[in-house]
Length: 376
Ligand code: PLP
Image 1 (cartoon, rainbow, N blue to C red):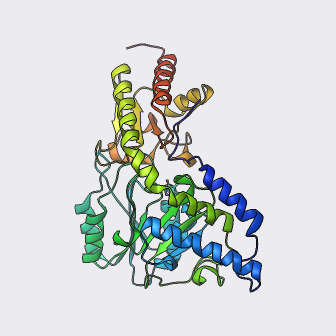
Image 2 (spheres, rainbow, N blue to C red):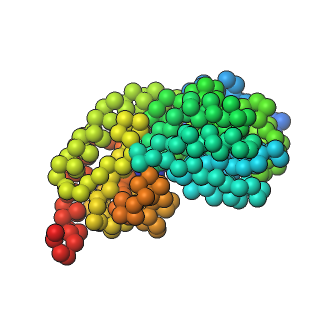
Image 3 (tube, helix red, strand yellow):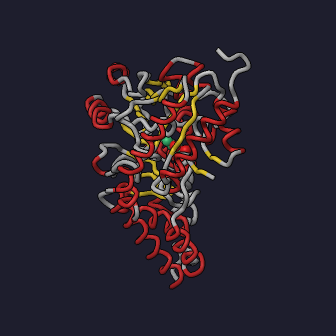
């Protein structure tokens, strides 16, 4: 068995599970209640918020609004950040579908402009500058791409937004534990986060909201979360997220070893399989992500065959896996062949060299078993 789909989701840490069970058993008061059980739960909640803020470099815990995960944070951001002065929404051509869908759903009829990337997946900054010069914009950019791991040049994006008076949201869902994240130094108005990508539980995330950046009403009205997100807080989830956030330095430290295993994997696959192309900038990407096109093969087919051999990998984003060719690889390469054949292998601090060696042998076998009828 091998699990190489950590950009899809990660294994929760044991301490996350233990803390969540503890919260479910003992901190079940409603944090909004005035009685002792409620106030105890409130203290647990605020301690967790402070831990997450400290781990991710927010200046103040109140800048974090808990949501049900990355998708909700992104949707909430569009609701809160958009103001009538924004004439257009500017995203990249390689955003997660959560951003693309939310931009159209909550854009209020504004034009949604997609900035192209180059073949290595890097944002075309000249094009961004040109578009921002045209009109006041709300910009949403992914920090580290979920399919290729390519890391955008955040300081350059931030400078352009500041120069042209644009608001900036960063989708940092894939970053924590893989590259350093310091919320207050990102220069963004809002940042989206999701716990299940860094060994926390699913269904919990946060939107970092810089003071003064809220222009409009929330999606879910209510008095909780500074009136920015109504509904009784998911205390076990929040506690689990805090436990996972506390261990981010441990994950980060492991990334040196993990990137070596990832590089070995790419070297071996390139050596043993003809027609293997690595997608994305080799240096400017997450240390644990590999995106590979197996030319002349169908990615969904390869993924299904690997799944039958108990290896979990994915074609494109987990939520789009196998349904359609990757819009990310297509935007980078303008090649249907590269997009149709791209497979994502994503590692974590728990991935071992042995697991990756077995993955390579299995991929080589599966690849051979799917040889086209006419061997060229
Ligand atoms: N943004 C990116 C870059 C992602 O990779 C994901 C999840 O795959 C999301 C947003 C959505 O996050 P969630 O699964 O917590 O809704």
